[in-house]
Length: 85
Image (tube, rainbow, N blue to C red; front, side, top):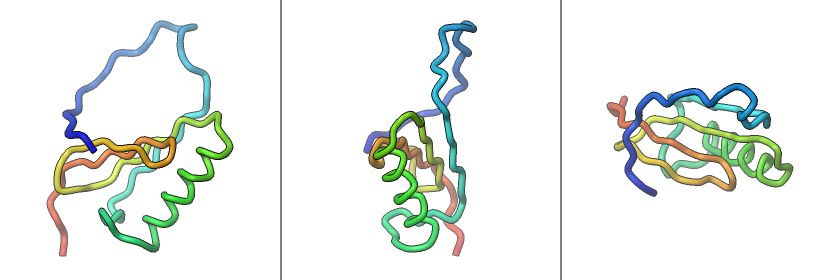
């Protein structure tokens, strides 16, 4: 896992873009290191996409710090967020 900072990017010129399907999952219900529920759903979805290819999958969840890691072939970003009890 590596720490990252986030910034807006620039769009690629028309015609030079990757035309594969892109899916983004954004949730506040993910528990870092947890199991079951949303965690299991996102893990199994990432596993499925890795096995079938052709999809760029991004997952964005709350965490204790900004970080980026790989979950199968998916990219999992954690965004530093306050903890809710």
